[in-house]
Length: 173
Image (tube, rainbow, N blue to C red):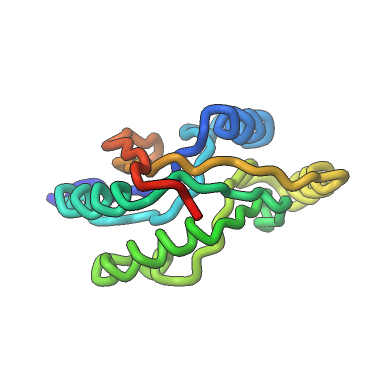
């Protein structure tokens, strides 16, 4: 039997996470909201390679300093809304991990990476358009801090945390 897939997300500073999670709790259909707000780097790494994945993450986190993530505005997901995120260090980290894990990547994880945090999904197009308009009105870009990586076991709906790995490198440029 194959182990459940692994999901890799970015860990945020407490204040930013609370802000993002409050938006998700306010706008995500409650019956579908089984996980906290998150920025996914990889959706399905092989669960049976947990030890190898963790070894790679420990190495990456040891040489990565915490970095800024700028939330630049909301964008439509069709039947939902996400906040777009911009961060050159995040893009570089994700690219390096994708290179190391290229043989494991699903089609979804191998395609382009557009970092975002989903605050609403699986609603009507009208409800999504209304939230997009509401969030866009007067949106002010804001900074969060990426402080580490979170690895999760996908359990068919809810996620179970497998590891929390803080960034331990020197100061970010």
